[in-house]
Image 1 (cartoon, helix red, strand yellow):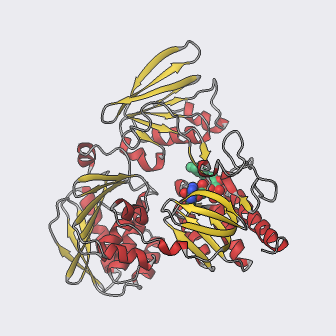
Image 2 (cartoon, protein in one colour):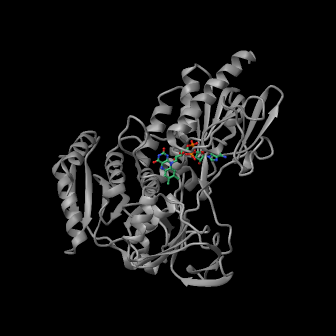
Image 3 (cartoon, protein in one colour):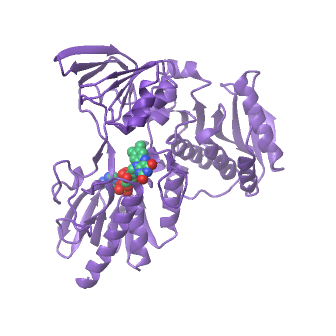
Length: 511
Ligand code: FAD
C-alpha cells in the first residue's frame, strides 16, 4: 500500500515515537476496510511501540490513535492517505508524547477548555487545505480529554456527505451542528470557540526596526532579509504560505524542480523561524498610521504594534463576481478551490466562471470528476493558453459559453442554478447546476490601507523600483503591489528588495 519512499520516511518518523500507542480499529469486509487494515498492518509492523486492538465505532471503517491506557478521541474514518498522510503521522507522534510545535499560550488555551467538544471534519484526500484543520483539531483532542475529533473522508462516506449537505471541504461539525467550512487555523478555531487570546502583551512590545505584514513568499523573504541585517524584526501572519497554500504543483521555483504548496509553506515558516524574528501569528492588520517617528499598526484583535519601518506584503485573494447569491451560497455550491472541492461534485453538473488559464485548468481537472462542466467567459474569446484550450475542446462533457455575463447564482439551501446574460443578444438564460467554481483572477488585500497609501485603479499599492510607497517609512512587496508580474520568485525578490530598502532608509535617516 505504501511505496518504498514513503515507507522509508515513515520508518524514520516512527523511530521518534516517545511512548507506546494503541491503534483501535473497526473494519468490515468492504474495499476501504481492507485498505485501512492493510495500512494499519504496515504501520504497526514498523514499530514495536504500536499495538493494535479491535474496537467498535459509529463508522466502518475507522480507527483511533490512543495512549496505552487512555483514549485520546483522535479518530480517522476512511484511509488517511493523500494529503492526510501527514495528519496521520503527526497524530502518531503527538499521541506518543512528542510536543507540538505551537506557542505555549495556545497550548494553555486548549487545555483550559472546560466543556465537551466533539468535532467531525469532512475532507477529501486531494484537498491540500484540509490537513491544517484536521491537524489543529487532532491536537486539541490530544491535549484536552474533553475534546474529540474524527476526520471523515467524504469518498467512502458519500451518504453522509449527501445527507449533511456538505458542499465544500474541509467542513467541520461541532457537537452535531455545522461549525465551519474552508481553510482555517488553530488560532481561528479557538477564537470561534470564544477562547479569547490574551494579547495585551503585544501592546508592550518594543518598537520594531522592521515590521512585516503578511506571511506569504514576499513577507517571509522580507523578514529573513531584515533579520539577517541584524534588525529588530517582527512579522504579523494570519498563517504562513499565502496563495502558495492554494497551489499544488510548483515547477518554476528556480532550483527546486518540483514542490507543492503546503510543503513550500512549511519551508517558508521553518526558514523564518530559523532567525530571530518575532512572529505574531493568528493576527491580521486592520489599519496603519504614521505617528511622529513611528508607524503604528493596529491589529484586528485591537492590539497596536509600533515600528520604525513597515513592509506590507499582504498579497491577494480570489476575486469575487459580486453578483446576488455568491456570498449566500459560499461553501454551499459556490467554490473557489477545484483541487479541494472537486471530489464533492462527483457525477454532478457544474460551471466554471472564467476563461483564463486558471479557469480552463480547473475545467479540465473537474471534467474528469463531474458529469458536465459549463465554462462561462465574459469576453468573446477564451484567454487561456492555446494548449489548454485545445485540451478543453477535446473533452466531450464540456460546454463553453463565451461573451456571457453572470447575473445571479440561485438556490434555496444550496446552489441550484446560474442566470447569465448572452451579451450578443442581451437575452437572459438559466442553467440548472449544483456547483459553481469562480476563477476570475485575484484582487489585492489592500482595503485596510486604502486611506493611508496611494493605490492604483485596481487597488494595488503603488511602489517604485526600491519598493517605497507613498508614505515615508512604509514599503510594500509582492502581489499586493503594482508589480506587473505575480509569481513566487518575483514576490520573494521584491520582499528582499523592500527589506534592503528599509535597512538603507534606517541608516540614512539614523533611526
Ligand atoms: P500571498 O501569497 O498572497 O501572501 C500574502 C499573505 O498575507 C497571506 O497569507 C494573507 O493571508 C496575508 N494577509 C492578507 N491581509 C493581511 C492582513 N491585513 N494582515 C496580516 N496578513 C494579511 N506562482 C508561481 O511562481 N508558480 C506557480 O506555480 C504558481 N501557482 C499559483 C497557483 C494558484 C492557484 C495561485 C492562486 C497562485 C499561484 N502562483 C504561482 C502565484 C504565487 O502564489 C503568488 O505570486 C505569491 O504567493 C505572492 O506572494 P505574496 O507573499 O506577495 O502574497
